[in-house]
Length: 444
Ligand code: BGC
Image: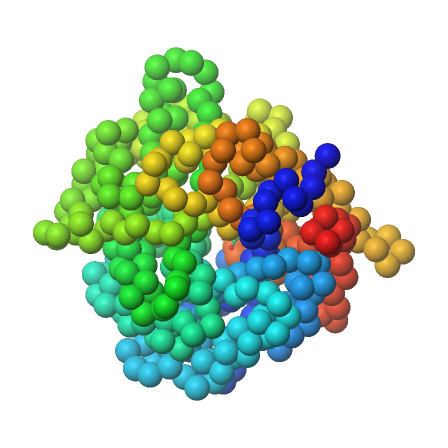
């Protein structure tokens, strides 16, 4: 039996969305293009030829959506600011329309009794900055500081919870190493500087917000995966250790003042090439919380490529794993191990599960949308969170569902749906799914 009270009176219950995935209005009211506008404009990039278009039109429908989050009895609404909407002229003053939009969203949250949690950066870098090197160019640090200061100055009177960056491993790894996400760059020579600059920006962003916003609670949101080795042979164990260092430690440990995890991946020393004197100290910041986002398990084995990592994934389909609509191995139990893993860092004061969700098929029937698999997934995960708090005494203080309304799933387009609320992308009609109804009841 799962009860809301098991999680304690101060536990934060939230839903999360992001600017590019939800807003639409890519060219309205002075917004400049982001790398995702440019990337999705290329032919044949997005699955099924999808284009983000209006997506779920949060730009015009934020009142309805914020009210929906409140109706489902959540207490936190996490959303991100679009950098090129707020600062189309990267170095200058904020655009009045961009600032007004986020002011309206924040005020609407407060009017609905929802605590606004702002993500400063959820992957939509201004295209103008990408043209100058994007995350690989050290100048990004100054630009990011200007952007963060602008957010803190405009919204810090009402927003007290800040997530400086969302999943650096995803946007750096997929965007600057694998070329699968925007801006579509590849190779270690792009990955390492982009990663190092992202770390510096997170820590600096934390310092800026703490200094400028009275009473701020500031954190970052990091992706994590449960890693297994295919068998116990030392080569494969070593592979798993490296993958774990890359996916679960690489962005966290420098922030905690531990430097990069070169113990498990000696070749990571190459990142020193992009470091300047003083960077090791500048990378560290004592965040109020660390956001963790767990979606899938990876089973790995030794491989001679790629360099540095020398590991590859054993395809989930070949292992008969339970797959979601993105062919990822859905394994809720992995979270148990990850919570134990992160619980061993004494520097982490508080953990927020700042995103958690799944894309399984929805079944529309007689005006209802049945999604028992999604409902069960959240329930299973919540049992694990509850055990983490009660039995293991881990400092877990929040759970945010990804996501409120079906939205644009990056490179995968509109097919994988994660929403607790179904969206008809033609009529923009929202219908609460069974999973959303479950939360409404559970959180009552
Ligand atoms: C990201 C979201 C994404 C979700 C589901 C997370 O990695 O932060 O933007 O939609 O996963 O794939």
